[in-house]
Image 1 (cartoon, rainbow, N blue to C red):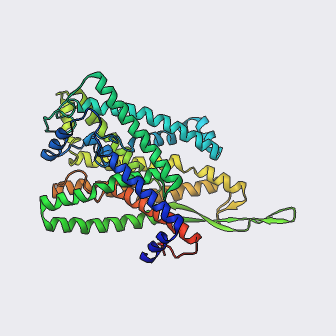
Image 2: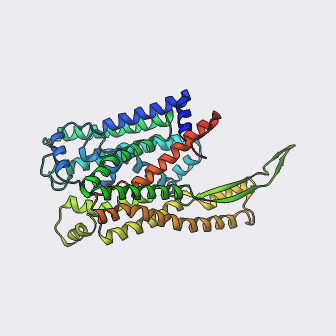
Image 3: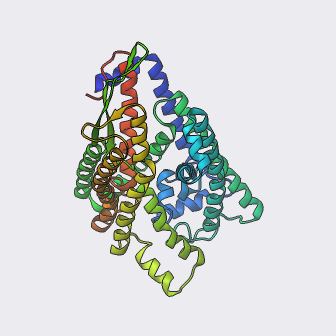
Length: 431
């Protein structure tokens, strides 16, 4: 692998792409620490030093690499784009116009991408407004801190901050597209990877300082095992064989080949974890904004804010399992796959073409989604268990959304470099 990595840097074109990607990642991290105009940098650092940030905005803070708590220019991170992409993807199932665009190929995809950008800007305006509304009151964004993070709360200053944060989201979209076009890997995924990986060293070191060397070594060992298990499951797939009958068109023969339909164990990826986390934040968000002392608000504060309550853990796991089945159902259509196979003369050995093929694909999909959903739920609760066992903060590095994204992006980027090396007849990373 090391020799292949050296070959990648010895290839001029590939070396240029790798250095370009690294430079964009560095620029992205720089924007994550530049404070937004109107934010008191000294107050933010005092709060981060004295108290531990709460878990209400944990998901967005994770995807922004800690930029949200610091209210930097890139405070919203890539989260508005992720949310917009998921919404547009879901709307392709509901809105016939979007479904037609999806089937039109490259031109339709470009149109859907444009809609995603517009929606991203709208969501960035809403999220930045809500974030500033919370941060302008001391103790709301960072629990237990009485420092005034935003000293000037005039409407001119608030509008300026909203504009800067929204512009920061636009710049992040542009940087991601630059990586996709001129770098290595998927740009948005690389930026998410950068945000999450940036928090690993500080989180690990905080465990070392708070819990000692034994806990630090134990967490590292658990981390290696979790990463190995996630890599194994992410690579696992069920290959359904497909045979294409030979067809004669004039004097030319077509078909007669064998292939397969790969169905991954984790067909839904990290999307169910994001859905479940976002949904569980809604009750806490409502209670926080209303500042109510009613019985329902007290119950939510007791069971859904801290994150280590059994009701929260059970709800989190069940929502992940539900959203796994839901997302797989809307992204993989067995009837459409069966119709396409029948159109081009393909069939599964032993299964009749048409409806029996669709029923067989649905049967296999439902069977393989069951362990996939349990796997996602188990990985997602690892940081919560760490919170209970070690008293670690809620950004525990080896578990949940973080490890799924880091491993997934790492594997995808390694495969892309591998394919480019193989095109130049070099030995690649993967064997």
